[in-house]
Image 1 (tube, rainbow, N blue to C red):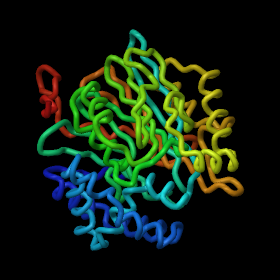
Image 2: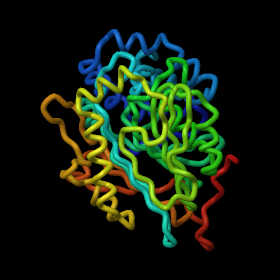
Image 3: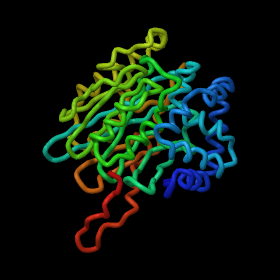
Length: 356
């Protein structure tokens, strides 16, 4: 297991990431360059995406600068690598939808889990970031070496899982998905994390499932709209890769995804989740290993998607339980990195997470 310790301000966190994972970052970027076009990589760095990060979450722009410095990789390449979802729609590269999210709230507690499906060339770059910012809660984040994050949870019991919605309209001056995830995790309550997602402009069509000890709040975000897909207080949350509430569609992207069979695939996975209810985190982890739908995917003819990893969060303790699978969940073991701050030797309580 590779857990990267990232503490301090944005630049310090990025440097720590780059120093501890330098070889892995360089290898991941080599594979990414081989799997993507030079044109799209260069174009991403020239859009308004960086300006959006600097305006909304400037410490994350500094974090990416720190990664570039510590790895001696051009900043423009670190930017483009972090703008992964945006690369998918800017030039229709690897527009192969994936990721399945499921969660349930009941009197015994709340869990939220997901498979993170990504292009196969990213396999081998899996890491967990343990983020300890100067202000705000500690966070554990599934990521690829060189990226600021893919999905995660913080010590204040706020978890964020995501699904790309490639048929929704995009905005080249909006906030990229990776920065939106980390921006939401900087908040110490579910309501404030959701409010953040409502306030920002979004670069990519995306579903965000935000959970805490009380349950879920799901929103589908596009260039023009943030629409609630799972109201606060809902006992069940299921989502794959087609919008359930947001109608701000990009007709060209929708036609292409329909032609490729990606929307049908998404509907099949959602139907599978609906007909296989689970009541606890352990059952969710087992379901994410399923090859029937499949929820756990490997590259197939004409498709380069692979389940990069999985997460399972349980909101019954403070801080919450956070489990990660770095690879295919039917082959790799689940691990629990734990939190940095030790509990009080007498009470068992942990120090306050900070922030709000």
